Length: 304
Ligand SMILES: Nc1nc2c(ncn2[C@@H]2O[C@H](COP(=O)(O)OP(=O)(O)OP(=O)(O)O)[C@@H](O)[C@H]2O)c(=O)[nH]1
Ligand SMILES: [Mg+2]
Image 1 (tube, protein in one colour):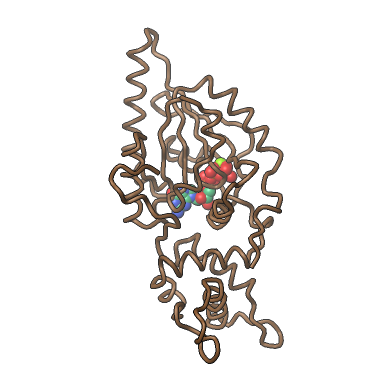
Image 2 (tube, rainbow, N blue to C red):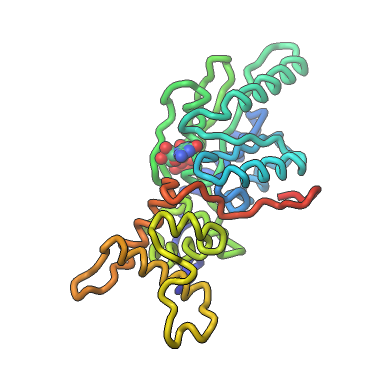
């Protein structure tokens, strides 16, 4: 299995431009809303945002919290709060969590009002990796479909200012990534969650990586979705003598999924690409279940 995240072109040129646009507009905003993916609260934190935002006041929104593990949601939220961040769990599809976030924004507006003599509307910038739900969150806050959204990365282009009923002004920004993933797992998790265009990825390798996470942390969900016994299936005869590697177990699980679903090519060969697409779709829509790919720090005092 190849870990080919480092040799594909996943950093399109327009992201450099976006970064420049964000840097110049940050001077105009009071507060940054950093939107991260609740399924990968670490991998979806963009180091570029830290670089350009400096000490700008910010809140963190863990979006897509309807797709992530509810126990992990609680633990991640607590971990962010322990480390001094104002953080919120959001489901921008249903609007769950919007009220609490709005309350915090209203408080920020009140603080701004009391700091300045002339009342000026609070200005907010919404930023994060591609496809994390920035525009969906903005539509929730605005209360109508104003920003364009889509189920693939790279939907928002250019900048878009929108006004809330309260007068606050929101800047939607295109999702950005950073030129080099120091840790290949970060790129893999971002790609699994849809922040990197599928067309630039080798989907079979990506689905195998997903299976490794699922077999390690959610074997029961995997088994019940596909009716496979992922930890034990297919290892007999000579195989059974050696401890199979995680990759070998994942390959068997992939084959079992393909066989159960009848994904076969001519000559009864297993159609792994079709099984890979199914697995990724099922993960992304939470058809397998609510899954978080990164464990929250459990120790008191530990920060994310
Ligand atoms: N289940 C779920 N889906 C969401 C949520 N928020 C957004 N989505 C979906 O995620 C996809 C991406 O949403 P967008 O709002 O376009 O994401 P974005 O961050 O603006 O994306 P770019 O502009 O491409 O960077 C869409 O298919 C949304 O319907 C959420 O909280 N839960
Ligand atoms: Mg967008």
